Length: 376
Ligand SMILES: NC(=O)c1ccc[n+]([C@@H]2O[C@H](COP(=O)([O-])OP(=O)(O)OC[C@H]3O[C@@H](n4cnc5c(N)ncnc54)[C@H](OP(=O)(O)O)[C@@H]3O)[C@@H](O)[C@H]2O)c1
Image 1 (cartoon, rainbow, N blue to C red):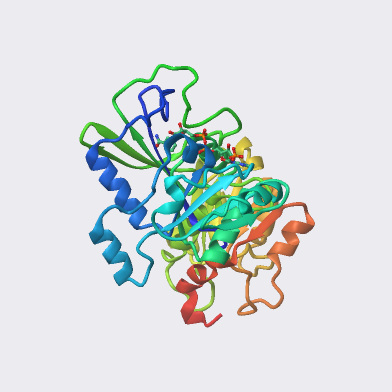
Image 2 (image 1 turned 120 degrees about the vertical axis):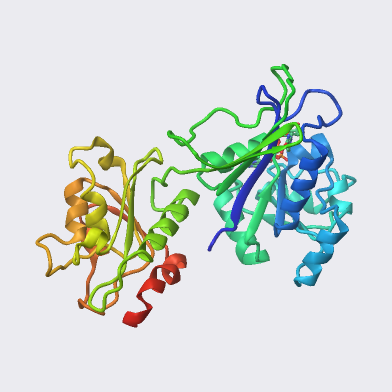
């Protein structure tokens, strides 16, 4: 994966605040929940907070449990996750706890901010990302430069807001504490701006003493040529559906999901579904929808293998079915090899007619697993 898995973690009051306006950090979680957070930290390769949180809370961001640190070391990992902060200004307090506790540290900043941060003598890597701080560049660098596969983001509100609005968060872990703040100038978890239109997927609810943990997954597909975190989730589902196909020696096993712009799943399908020996995944999924469904124009089709461009068993190949349905975006894991058809180019057929096609090769192995017997 080019990016780490990004997990946003926060605790809020019943009226949606992250903190109050007092000088001390407001403790929202319960003791057992702080221990849960410690466990999530221990399972992460890196922990990120914004410079605003460093200034307000002066956190250490450690794995506090000696047993969890020992388990990390036994697995060949550093005792503490990499500590990461973001600062546009580079205006950081070198005496803050962040720099003097735990393991390795990195500051992502702007070119200007780097000049300032480098002058502070911080025991940390200072990585400039250009004139502005680009979150995709940051995540790509964390993955490629530090091998971070799992990133825990512990706030604050401005950082969480950007990652969610930019479709870069894989999961939100939210703890609601039974107290009110009631101060209009206190920091809120999420600021104004453009969020996904529809509903997130609820993954879990858990009572922990007097707080409640809820875990959510964003569902809205990306909108352009760059994948959103939800695109990976849906493509993973398409690959899982491929494993449901009755095996065949003469056709691929493929899964497909059609998802509306607001993240609503419209239909799913897989090859040879429902006893039809020749039906394709995209055909099976689109066949469950009313062709006049207005949501199709904004929908994304996820298919574990690129939609077919040539077909003997039915008059219209899947790329044509997608065009006829009015779908404008396709995400796939695997370009069709020459196993059954030479130079099959469903992607070319779709892009020539203005459909955005994203190929995410990091999912190719998953898509190929149910087809191993075909030696594609
Ligand atoms: N309850 C909880 O779970 C929880 C968790 C964490 C924090 N908090 C609370 O949240 C509050 C802090 O939140 P916050 O929103 O003020 O701060 P924040 O999100 O922690 O940090 C914001 C800062 O990060 C840098 N930054 C973020 N995005 C940037 C971008 N795109 N380009 C350049 N720089 C960027 C900037 O640093 P520079 O100013 O250096 O440019 C910005 O001022 C505190 O009150 C804290 O107690 C609560």
